[in-house]
Length: 326
Image 1: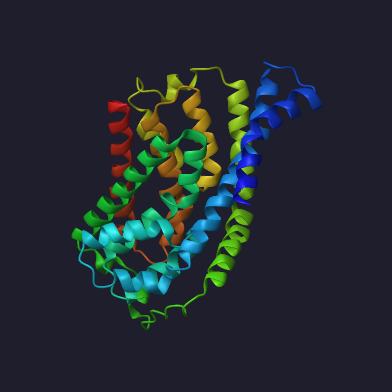
Image 2: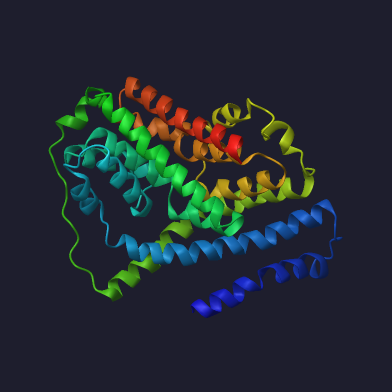
C-alpha cells in the first residue's frame, strides 16, 4: 500500500497539468490556468500527505492517552515540565473544543499552570498536520524551523506564565471540581493500534478536508492572480510593521493548520518574508479570538491578558528574528 501511495503521489503534477490544459482546455500561462492547475495539484497532494502521516501518528497516539499524559506531567518541575508538556502536545489528541476539559483534568491532576499552558500552546500549533503540510509544501527545512520555533515559544511562554504565580486567576469552579484524573487505557494489541490509525484518518482528515480545500482555493487565487513580488511590498523584510500587522490580522481569524498552510505557501512564493508569514501562521493557530473565548471559561480575564501578551510577544520575536537573519 505504501508503494502504491508513492506511485500515485509522483504522478500528481503531470495529472494536474494534463487535466487543466488538455481535458479542460485552459490556456497555458493564463491566470485562470495557473490557479486551476495549483488547485488540482495541491488538493490531492495535501490530502494524501495528511492521510499517510495521520495514520502513523494515530498509531503513535494510542500510546499517549490524556490520562497517561496527565500522569507523565503531574509533579514535574517547571522548565522540565514545560519541555515535556510542549513535546507531548505534538502527539496528543487535541483541538480547540477539548481545551476546557483538558485544562481541568491537568489542573486537578496537579500539573503546574505553566506546564499546562505549554501543552495547550504546542498542541494546536505544532501538531502533525502543521508539520506534514509544511514539509510537503515548503520542504523539511521550513518544517523543522517551524517545529523548533513553535516548541520554543510554547516552552518559554508557559515557563514565564508559570513563574508569575497566577494560579489564583484560574476560575474558582475549576479548582472546586472533584479530582478525576481518569484511568489509563488497557493494553492494546497491534491490531487494535492499527485500527486506531484508521480511526484517526477517518476522524481527523474527515474534519479538516474542508479547511484544506478552502485554504488551497484561496492560495490558488493568490497564485494565479497576484503578481510575483507583490507581497514583498506589504509583508516583506523592508516593512518593519509587517510582523505586528500579521499577528494582529491573524487573531480574529478562525482556522487550523490545514487551512492556513496552503495560504502560507503562496504568500512566500509571492515575496512575503518568512518571519512575517510564520508569525501570521502562529497567530492564526494559537492566538485566535475563538481560542481565547473558549479558554475564558476556565481562565479569568487577567490571566487571559497575560497569556495573550506573553504568547504574542514570543510570536513577534520569532517573526522579527527570522526576518533579520534569513
